[in-house]
Length: 332
Image (cartoon, rainbow, N blue to C red):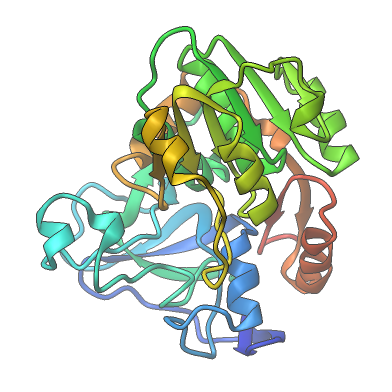
């Protein structure tokens, strides 16, 4: 089989590897698509201490089961599945209190073990979620990032009639816009510096779009502000636009070495809640159910590349062109 391998930080190659065989409790998947994510950029750049090289990245994957190991109930050959890449240890403090996404012994497909930028891959059967036939190929490939947005939604108080401001009109920002609107937001406004993304956000059905929050007609602020960028300037600006009694959700991944300035007095005096949302937590199946029930996100997929075009896909991602980029290992 062919796979994209990060041989060392900054170096990638498409190589031939032995076809995998399933062990007990495992299945082999023929990957149909795998989304490119900011985490993959960090892996290529050597910025995640948990990664051991060489490694096959890719954790937003969907495909068909082609082989099943021993002790695998409920997952049959030819079943189309999406893979929850997160594998909490099950025994640390956080796993025992039901917060596996904060696991002390974190493991994940495409991060600490080989992932989905490959024609074939082995995963624990427990990570597989069977997909309904009604889901399009694009929608199926969006299940994992949508499950992150669903977890973010679940972290919010969700009171009726609230107005939302989202920083970032990339895939994750627009997914958050879709899920909060679906959950009953009174209005959703989106801010992004990228004019192409701003134009697309207007067509995606958000209420207001701008290249800076000051241009939005809401001087009283927003009940909920969500950062989906990880950019310190956006975070600091967003914290200043939360209305009294409102909530700020840190959803974007910021540089761990950076800090943001804010007024602790204002947080205290205006009873502002600051919440974080990390990865996926009990949200994978709900994401599938939302897509199956009609949440329309197919337009978020703007590019599909083959394995041999991986470097071009990376360059497209880094340039901020388009939206979600999928790698289709069976292409070409």
